[in-house]
Figure 1 (tube, rainbow, N blue to C red):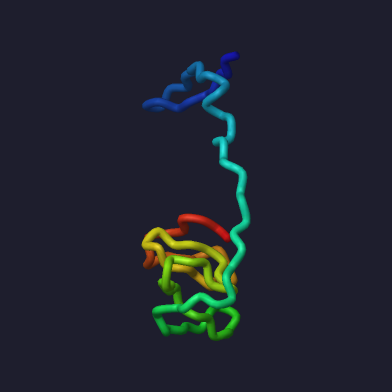
Figure 2 (cartoon, rainbow, N blue to C red):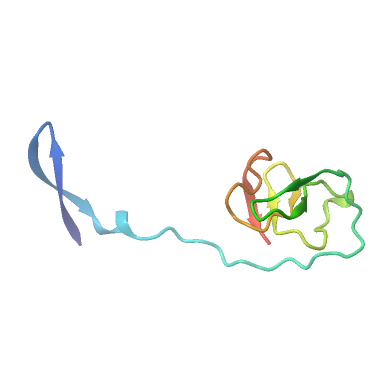
Amino acid sequence: MVILRKVMLAGCLTLISVPAYAFQPPQTKPHTPVKPDQNVQILDDGHYRNVDGKIIHSPSHTAGNRVPAGASAKCGDGSYSFSQHHRGTCSHHGGVEEWL
């Protein structure tokens, strides 16, 4: 199946054909929830105030790279975020590797 799209090129209206598969959403692997461990040692001790005014633990590495209780995401640098909002999560830690 081919979809015709109208495109403006140099001021001229041109029809181009684009394969239908180009408009399908990307396939994602199913999410497997990770069970946090209540007894994980958090190695970093920073905190910040979020947009709601709440004090939140900064992204932190853990002993044995185990998921700490309360973590919401694993960052690209291996730290765990406790962010309560998606926007900005792991922004200085390599982006979100996985939502928990």
